[in-house]
Image 1 (cartoon, rainbow, N blue to C red):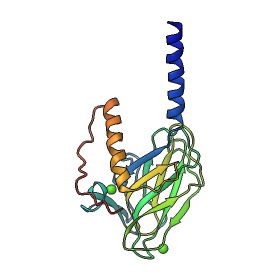
Image 2: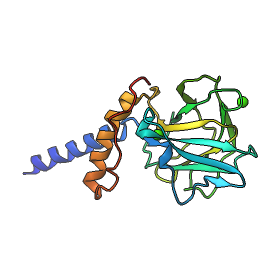
Image 3: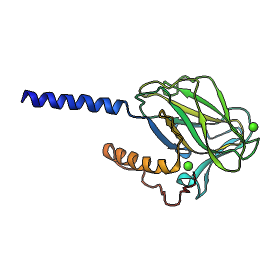
Image 4: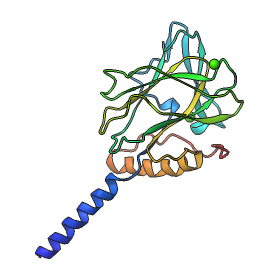
Length: 206
Ligand SMILES: [Ca+2]
Ligand SMILES: [Ca+2]
């Protein structure tokens, strides 16, 4: 009996080591911003929820209006991070011209109370949706409380956000597999109430 208990304890310890060293990968649709804190319309600055069947979840956030610098912001609260080292953020975005190829971005590690310095991220303009990488200068912290803020700087559009520490470039194919596992995990811990999303027509070209 004592041996049995020892074996079970060893198994639990090794399982916790395996899980704590797992890569952190989290995806969130741009349109699933935190509704209570995000500001999508202020003083002529507007993020519009836009339908497009080629986009992930058939929606993306389109910015239009004045460029006064971070007047409107989309906030994304990240789930608990066990290993924040090497964490980077990726945006699936559309930056079609020189007036639409940048965002202002920020990190908070205390749930949005204080924010790290503003960063500008940009990429060469192209007519295609692409993954833009961001290495935050404010490092994420272990645990809960990490929040990303994406604010307008130009007219760049946003479809999907990914945060990860495994150095891998995100893809829609990976996201679809990840989403199934994520939804199964959510169903295991809480009533499933966000099943309205349809994934059938997501373009697989990314
Ligand atoms: Ca520009
Ligand atoms: Ca989307």
